[in-house]
Every structure is written in structure tokens, then in C-alpha cells.
Length: 347
Image 1 (cartoon, rainbow, N blue to C red):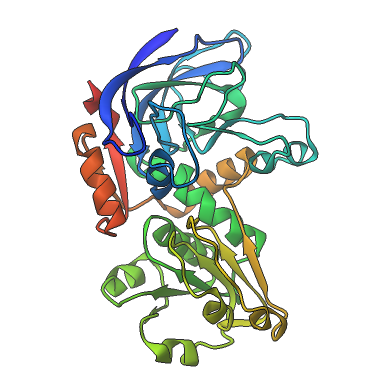
Image 2: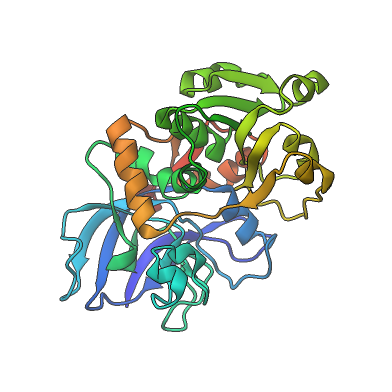
């Protein structure tokens, strides 16, 4: 076993603290990664605080991991020592079900193995990227192209693929009008990606305080949802709306913004149910859908797309000692647009 430095939550109600965790020995198909940067995702906060159910503690979160391969197993063929690589929200799946065979491991019918807080194949609880090293089976490690800096690449492993996947699935591109609800960690990547795909992009945010940023990132229009006139002016406009916020919103009002056959896709994950007025759906043959991350193949496709178009996350790099402060700032929407931990500060 390998003992490494980490930051972990001792319980649902306590702040994260410095600690050590154990990583398994490198197996024949494993890759040992020296983590350089780890993004802070809103779901990290939800998870360690027990919002989505009870957890096993201590728990080191983090599923936006960028680093360098330092050791490989005897049968590894996909990666070599020195490679720039990433690990996202999952580190394993059954590999055998219909969804896994399609390259949609995130929807594994037996349940994919999350990067942290999940039961791994050896029965241990997985620990995430707020640490100096991680051991992952080679099939769940992706290559980070040279065109993307590692710190800006880390959030792409969750925020990037979480927005890229539905944009691709619902065919965002030239001639399509895409609305993005919320300009945060997920939303800012949705804007960048949809713009790069050639869609007409509109940000729907509570206020106009981030309007300058939204337009700079690629939005064509920016509207405040706190203004009732917004919903009147934009009624029946969008082919696709990506809802990135992790808090309840009036879904039925947003459905009215869709054109015929339009889809509203939830990628934010509030703990509370989101009620829907069915007439908001049937009056325009509209769809209300959800999307998780992408599979490993699509995640690599997303990284290559970002490198081709010069895209990375907008980040604020912090030392490990600022993690708890960063959590409070995320909850207060006081980040533009993703905190990234410099893991060299873990000691």
C-alpha cells in the first residue's frame, strides 16, 4: 500500500483537514498518477456534507484530477510514465453490461465506481483527488493534450464533460439556439463549448452582474431571469437549454422558453425534487431530460475538442489550506469560475 497526503472530511459537519490516505499497490493494469491539480466541484460539497445520502468518513473528495503518470503496471498499454493524464468522476464499471459495451460507462447498469465515496472492486471506499497520488485502472485514465495547461484541464474532467455530453447528444451546432441557465463552474464551460460548436448561445442568469464575462466567454446574449420580461421576450426561442444550477428553479417557466421539440436538460443536481407542470411539456412537444458525465471515449473526445479550440476552464488556483474557505465561496457563488487545488501544497 502507498500512503499519501490528502485533505479529507472527518464527518458531514466538520471542515476538511490534512490527513493521510492509503492507495492500493499498482496492479498489472493500473496507473499511478502524481496529482498536480484537483478541481473543486459543487458536488464535492454536497457529498461530504451528506446532502446526497450518508457517507463513509474520513472522505477525501475530488473528481477533477490532472497529473503525471509516475508508474505503470506490467500489462498497461494505454499510458506510459511521464504522460499528462486526467481522471474524472469514475474509476471503474462492470465493463460487461450493454451500456458499458456502448462506451457509456457512466450509465453502467450495475453502477459505475465513483472516484470517491464508492465501494471499489477490493471492497475499500474510494478516495478522491484532494491528495498527492492516485492509482486507477488504465481504462479510466484519459490523455490530456499538450495544448491544455494541467491546471485549466482539471475542471474539464467534470465540468467540461458534464456540459459537453448533452451538447453533443442534443446536437448543438450551427443553426441551433442554446440557452445556458447559470454562469458558474458548469455554466461557463457550457457557454464556451456551445459557442465553439457553432451554436447561438444565450446565458440565463439571475442578474446581469456576470454579463461582461458571459459575452467574453462566447455568449451572444445575456438575460436576467429575475426580470419577468425575460420569460415573455424569450418564449419559444431555444432548441436546447442546459440547466447547470444546483438549486431549485421553476422548471415549468423555463420549459416555456423552448421551441417546438426543444429539450431542457438538467446537469445541475439539487437535492430537492423539481416539480413540472405537464402542460409546459405537451403544448410544445418539449422534453425535460437529465444528463450525467460522459463515457471515457467521449471524455477523451471532449479533451481533444478543447485542445483544438484552445479551451480550458476559467480558474482560481488555491493552496490546500484554502479548501474550506473555497467551499464557502462556492456556496456564495463567489468564484469565477472554478477553484483548483495546487496539490503540491498538501505537504
